Length: 376
Image: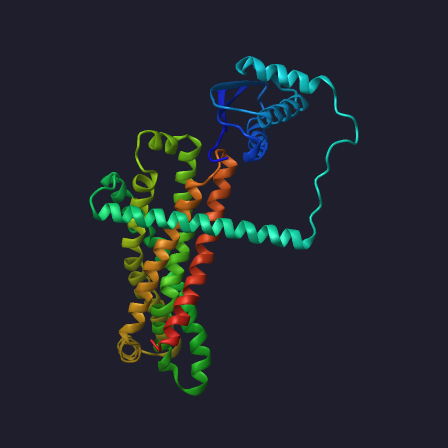
């Protein structure tokens, strides 16, 4: 099915309203009842079920099958089902379907898949997910093009809010992680380099590692867990409340209005956060070097400036830009494609973090391979 054809809404404290809309065709496949069960689990006090079919289009036996299953699940949990909101023809067909109880043992058992089938389905699912993400990436690029032409519609104050949330609000956690990473690098380097009387090279080790790898990667991972997850939760909640549907109805592009300001905020803030992370990492390494190795601030900084070319900092900044785009797109993609229940929003948030971190590691590897091949 191309859109959500069934959604659930709390009508009263004890009543769940099932909104059925759009066209139902067996060619779209059968609708599963996971969302329905999730709503019942969230609201155990539900005692009545009613239907709203005012937006229902064409339908066939797939709708009857879904309603019969819904009816059976409701009765099993002691919920009263009010079918007065259904068309008369559907009510008659449901009654006909339930007139003759199913004989024991005739229910079709789900086929057990072997390991090859499971692997195959996993690969097919991964390919579909990848294609959908690439399509979303294309829509984001088109949205950037519309913004350059002045045709993209979004609120400028939203961009300000996202900039503040992505940048200044993240400084605390970035500071803590970066200082600790710098200290860990210095500790590890000090133990080994001191054996060879080369303690001064701890500054080079910390500077190179922070500039080229650790600052952009750790900042991106922090952003994936903090900002990417928040984007997925925000957009997933809007999906549940049908706010994204409302934007489409008004002719406003959800990608322009919702995704673009979030994407711009991360593109703008990631390089700045990476520079700040570099400074904090160097500071953490300096603390360890001064305390453990009796180096001075001037010796530490002079050694770092002399042995770590700016090229490594530029490579780190380029990585941070790529990571910012990946984190924003992962969070927004999962949020925009979230289901319409609280559990689905939670799942989308988790998937956004996982997807963001995986993409960060993959693209970091690719950039490292490319720069190594070209000798940069």
